[in-house]
Length: 271
Ligand SMILES: NC(=O)c1ccc[n+]([C@@H]2O[C@H](COP(=O)([O-])OP(=O)(O)OC[C@H]3O[C@@H](n4cnc5c(N)ncnc54)[C@H](OP(=O)(O)O)[C@@H]3O)[C@@H](O)[C@H]2O)c1
Image (cartoon, rainbow, N blue to C red; front, side):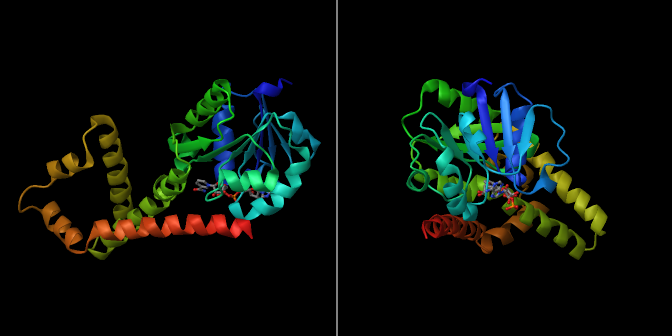
């Protein structure tokens, strides 16, 4: 096994499995070990490129990149479990919301740390990840991670780690927020008299089509909105109500709540 080309992933839940499955489709690491305590989550994975284990062991030391894909609430316990096996030439990569690089360093005594915030479209390689790292990583190591992140979507390196908590509230939680808005579209469609089935189909296709259009045309959201808003027309009538109800304020407050929760998670992990 080539240590430089190896990764161990702890946690194969929603995000961990999305990341591992995308990375495994590219030739980024030649050895991938997944450690997941819940065997029902790994039972159906038949990839020949991934090995599975259900507990932390000395094998962890053999892998250069140690990905923490567990819930922030599990970190305190996990840090104690992995600490005896960490070697100074390894790199910890955390996807945990809210947990800072300093906190990871405090709990593990480890010096080389990367923090990333992916999002769930990573499941279909359409994610967007932001990341930051300690400044003791080589360009080769950073390129390796950038390639890994780009296997499940796009990525942006942020120089200021505090921006990760803010991005978490936008792109990390964003899919959840957008799905909630989609639910409202479906609900409202039914309320105005469409069948549930038709409402759902129209709402979903409208979301997909609008997202693809913005991607392809490179027009701003404002330009695209203006293009469908004829003076005195139906779209304008609906938009006027959104403005009256202060949609910007509502979305801003929603995002502030997510930022606050991210900060709380970091504090809870310190206890
Ligand atoms: N889901 C998202 O949208 C999203 C987006 C960006 C970032 N994240 C971050 O991604 C992380 C994972 O989220 P998730 O939704 O994928 O969580 P999840 O589905 O609960 O997955 C975590 C997995 O790790 C396992 N695990 C916990 N401790 C372990 C240990 N000591 N050894 C082996 N396996 C262990 C858990 O097993 P048990 O269930 O048995 O404990 C669970 O299967 C979180 O920190 C979250 O902040 C999530």
